[in-house]
Image (cartoon, rainbow, N blue to C red):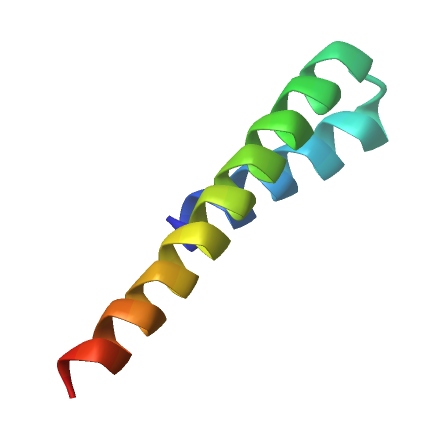
Length: 53
């Protein structure tokens, strides 16, 4: 999932460079949402892994 976040972030940066504001904002928004989902899943996996030990 982190790979998708990086891909959307790169798309947003490239779109911003070429002046496609709407596409850049959309891709940046998707990257932001995916990043926060990744962080939540990462923290949950740390907590669940800790309890099984």
